[in-house]
Image (cartoon, rainbow, N blue to C red; front, side):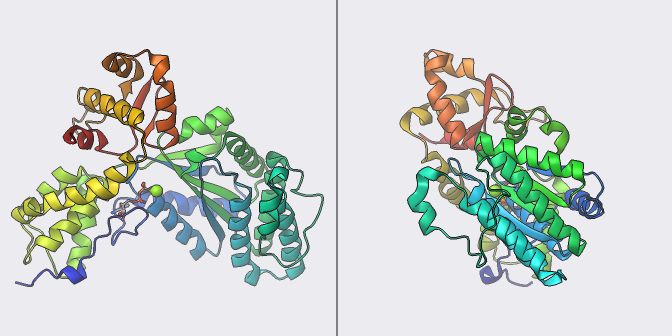
Length: 407
Ligand SMILES: Nc1ncnc2c1ncn2[C@@H]1O[C@H](COP(=O)(O)OP(=O)(O)O)[C@@H](O)[C@H]1O
Ligand SMILES: [Mg+2]
């Protein structure tokens, strides 16, 4: 029987870490292929928005979709939205990257240069109050900035013009441009509005530029608060935990490539512990591999390794997030965690169901209004979200369970 070599451990727990096997996302990849093909042909198509809890694999999927676009010779760029940061510069940098990818296929370099001039003007047109910062920052485009396009200072007007011009460059080479936006729920409301308007305009023109977003479950609410038509503009895909077959594949396929196998019972226990959440699948898989002496890996190996995986998650996945909260916010989350036990999902799996904010107030003996600042801060920090009015839920799977085990 072959040994299980820790050096060859294939699993990859960690935010944005590419998994050794992208399991259970076949449908999303197929849908995106069709989107790319349709958009390149000027057919009307909605942009994709991936939504889901933390650790379900949105970033990894977004990166895979990006590769898919690159394989079709599309120009691509990616940004990660941050609270309190305007999209102007990140979008400029991402589109710069995208157009650089397209430039070698373009027959008229002067048209590319003309676009870069517009891009530079767009990038340089940031807050006048930030004059110092503006001087220091250069978009890395050698030519002169153009004027009169995408430089009005109104982000909505400017994005529409910039995207339209970028799409023209893509049309010239017969492909398209895809702009990927991770953590999209963190965009400022004016930027969300502007992006929706730009996507709306482009889809009406049949211009080959799409925005592909990823964000927490309340992303649809964020978008429709900005523009009511956003529901028709985007195609939402809920990214969720893996089903049993996909989870087994996520563990089994990389192991098989190393000549290692799992006993069926080992996979049973692994699924019980991970709940099929991709981050947990990787974490338990990794710890189990490190502990297992030889193939096939057994249920006992999984059980011995579990405390290690939990300790790792407590620090890297749960603890790092909990530490971002103030004492008042922690108290709020603890009350949430206690109440969340009482509302398991229909399938009994997810113990961290949404909790009515009124109940949290009651449990803490406070007036609901007095807890609004804590709630809003936690939403802003991305620790909780409000999917339905008057309720909140954790953005991190099993977070309630984790808090209940903490003294
Ligand atoms: N389809 C998948 N199959 C197996 N593992 C996955 C899959 N998607 C993501 N992972 C793993 O899950 C973890 C979290 O992925 P990430 O993309 O950062 O999630 P999110 O962006 O939703 O928080 C990473 O360790 C990654 O390797
Ligand atoms: Mg992510």
